[in-house]
Image 1 (cartoon, helix red, strand yellow):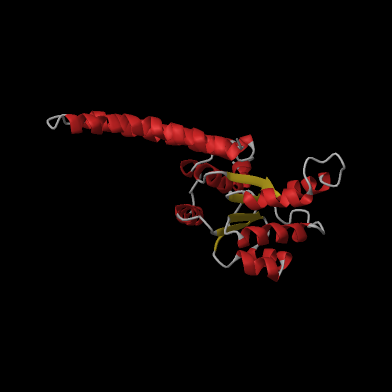
Image 2 (cartoon, rainbow, N blue to C red):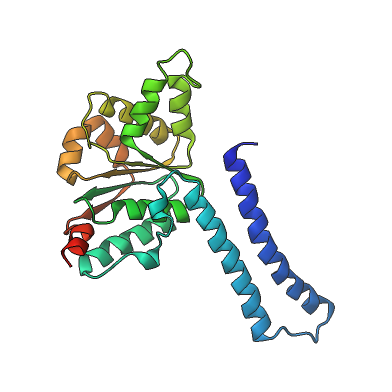
Length: 240
């Protein structure tokens, strides 16, 4: 059984546990027309369902490949201390409501919360996979070894099949091979209607110039753009 199937099975079990308890109230009402659950009973069962949903979302996040530093990332934990921060958070919430077959890029200054937003996506979207662009390049280098566990073709297929793929640190080192392998991955995902998220510290204009028109045309066909054009949160924290 694949990891994705195992994860989905666990999520289904968790949700069913809470739903079964709620169904038991409905069954009692059906068997006894005079039975009416108290508001406290209904609230308790709804609370149980929310608890299991939160638990499974946390599992989503921790299995995504993102760093442990971001395991507490959530909508509630993002600091909206300026209007620009609230604006980008609202855009992310809208994207998550209907992310299937969509693309998203998050660009702009470092330290503004782009990776935290990636973690929120991993929490909210089932089977999201997070990876840094240079990690893909390292994996491709590993494929050259005769001891490699997978070929380049198998690696490409794996990245094509993630239901949601989030690629961070694009253009960080501007290696000569980065644009080439990004095109292959994005093109495969575009043709298979998969949700893809690109993250970069470059501006939108710089990223378009770096990736080139073939990637830009495919990626922006059904794309949401979130630009982080405000000061680094980390710098602000260090200055206090």
